[in-house]
Length: 132
Image (cartoon, rainbow, N blue to C red):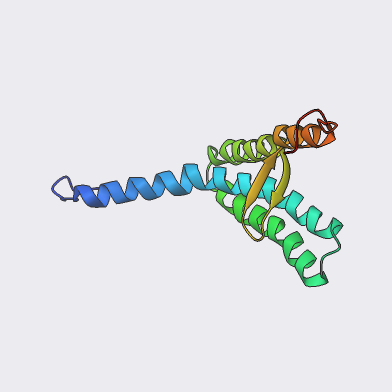
């Protein structure tokens, strides 16, 4: 039984509830999102004929995060839908992405921006304007 005379500081209660919120609700969503985004990155690394070690590490990253995610999901019944929600969010966002450039700076190009760029490049040059 809990002693009603026991004094617990408010800071300790807030820290406990913050940790509970992060590990029970936010972490499964983030891990589901990472799994959904890391699998295509691993597949893309293999299709680009990168070095063996790069392909191995990129391919191993998503299953490792998935196993970590399921270890969090197995803790409570509420975390499984949250993991699925994060996975669905990752899939929905990646359906809008055309290209991800990681080096020399991170750049994400959406399908709409790629369409605009390619249609602009396909237009014939306007030869009626003066060049001087």
